[in-house]
Length: 405
Image 1 (cartoon, helix red, strand yellow):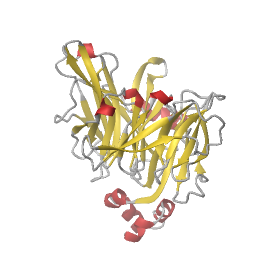
Image 2: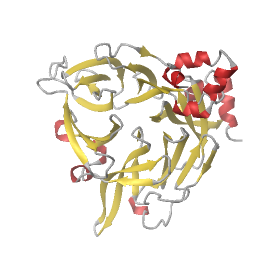
Image 3: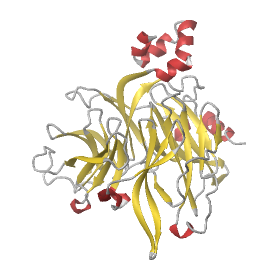
Image 4: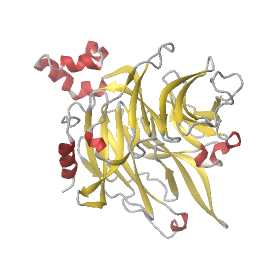
């Protein structure tokens, strides 16, 4: 068993076809839960100038050799079950799985009435599972979903959260209908937890901004506090323990708590939660990195500043970049940054080497503000699920239509 755990995923899939004994061992739930290689990949999702309504994807092998990175590119085959969705967005990656969310007409004749679909995708073994998401509302309330894999059981979970959109409605609404529902893949049902729900004054900032760190989901949020003059908002981070299914609040240092939630993002840096604060006075070209220490709320330390326009940075550009934003991190800790030049309409992804202060260009171009990086390890989670990745358009359409009678 220990030897099998060290094998690359291609070898595991080959051994699975050798004999019934190998297949039985690999299909064992305990083996699937604990198997993962140490080879990290970076799934880059980006909108290009030619297809503004669907993501393009490239997977980059994130090895330890800085001299060879980035040289190993792979363009994963996007399952038809994903392509059939309208305006799909990536929610998060966790334990080698990627969760996407989109909409689809309830039938081909009625394009105005939509159903909401989440898709769990394992790009390493080309497994994909669609999940119908019920009770999604927009208007007075707003619904979004989060995703993560339980550390203890390797159980994929989707959490659906509804919050009050306008602060003027907070006082007159006593409780939020179906505020939280949780879906577990093994049971295939949505259920309602009743403990430790978010406060009704909380407003989430969720799109493309959820991260999973050490068994917790995290989102940016604002808490709207009533004052004599109306409402005052301050920024915070909401956590969700994937194992216990309890919510928590991560308070921020005053410098960040009183900053606009639009000026910072969150990320996973070597299994630590970090806040990335963009200095608006520098037009976003300077980002400070704050790390949460030992999971202690409000114990954030400012680690360093990222400034790719600094005089000593070898960026190969005369005059520097017009705007920048950190999209993610390599396994080494080096940031991956979306940059845009004055002379270009599209943006480009670069890697900034913190030690040599050198910039390497990844060759990924897209629409500014629409490039995201999701690290993932190779895993065999979902191997026990039906292989739906090979569906053609008709088969995928029929399967999605069958999710709801």
